[in-house]
Length: 399
Image (cartoon, rainbow, N blue to C red; front, side, top):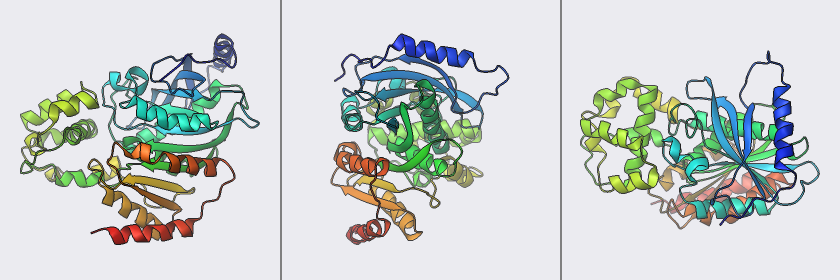
């Protein structure tokens, strides 16, 4: 799927310029989120075929505790010279990969490299640069706290800032959009919400397009009880194990309701990426992991809201949420109701339904995603009232 990266300018010259710029920075300047630490040319079989250049960036960003940390990400550039004003940027937030360092997309590639490559190629072919964050703790120091949405959102936003430091002035446009799938959909959604409130960054956020967006993961607590012995698909069990690992990092007291089998499953999740873990856990139940309901843990409601909650108002730019009506990983109805709530509050939201499952949504949504991005990064118009009206027939279809 990939080919050797073509060079629009000498990589050695580009990196030499970068190193000079970094070394010239005053020692007294305080480190801050969005700082570029290092950059190297990147080659891998999973690089999208339309990427003429690819770089791996190490940059500073926030960890889940609000401390400054390092993270990694990839920057893909389209072919040809940058247009006047620079290449607009699509900030890509990936779906669930796992929580171990070797599961980072820049280390082992996307979980579905051909599908993700097809999707990103559409933007690269249209003349957009793509900034793809690994998320803090995936392939970088520290542990990855799965689905901690504000951290992943901050990571994607800070990578856009760092990407502008890599290239000469004028090569990247300040205009950018956030795009994400599954775990990354929540990150892209929240990244846009944060960006709309930060007007002093020099960046020009224009909107968010997301697919398979988890908007009510807090309800998972209702299923995390010893009595829930229904056999689950392996992917669902993997998501639960990754989430429990993250919750344990933020609130170790949760260990009190885990069974020995639950602790063993979390330990397994810390080693295996999504594909192998889903295979290993296929047919297992959620209840096996618990000796008492997770809902009995003191303060669990507030913890889950802080950890998983997505904004329900205050978006400054248009959103489009695409979802598969046969999605079993992220229930279709929860995201449809979330979009409806946004529309009722007057938020600029659109919703698209596709007759596919979670895995198939990204391919199904490609045309809508490209059209949305073209409109937001160009001179397109978003008709909020018309999009709100389009939600009504979808609600009427709900049984």
